[in-house]
Image (cartoon, rainbow, N blue to C red; front, side, top):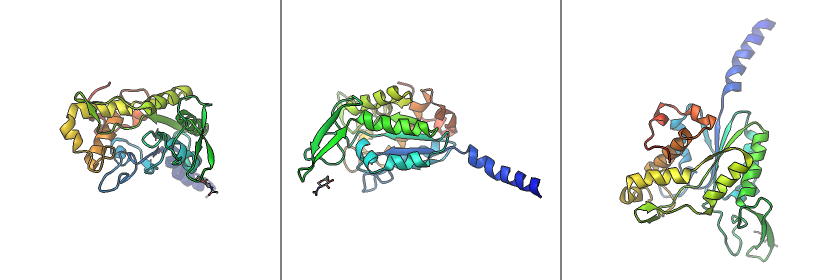
Length: 254
Ligand SMILES: *[C@@H]1O[C@H](CO)[C@@H](O)[C@H](O)[C@H]1NC(C)=O
């Protein structure tokens, strides 16, 4: 009886121990229906290319700072198990604002750089840089045994000379934060720009139904495929969880 219970418990426990999950932290470009009006975020489309489940914790309107200050990284840090992946992608809402909008970060990439901003009611608020918020989240996730992946923000539907324009400063900051913490960086901006450039401006423009930032479901799927291509072209262990559909995503390495 005793040994039978042990066997049953072992059988029950084994799959639970092995199962890995991909958690996603980001803004409206990743979140379900993130831009409203029939738009969708790319986090909804990643799971079909992986052999392990995706939990999309992206929330529209968030920045590296507000996702931190609202305790959303803390929730993921408290949830992850050893070996879980966490894809972190911000930048669209992190730009400067006056009065403070609760989302802006200090300008620059120094971990210790701060700025004092002024709320609409006159209150002074200390804010940190994009790398500060991202590096803190990555460090805490690694301490839990999770595998963070820092991904750069998606491009908007902005063109120059027949190509998607160069990325804003948060693209470089994402790479910096990943490099400083020794985790994988996916140049998602670059991989999506490559996909959009190959499709051309008129086809790409059909992916932006609301504004120049948020995607149709078809556009969000291209953005998810571009992330998978970035994974396949890199060395992160998550590439071993890309399924056959993921192996078949278009375009090459950049
Ligand atoms: C002023 O605004 C800030 C930021 O929204 C808020 O945290 C603070 O509580 C407000 N202070 C007062 C006195 O309303």
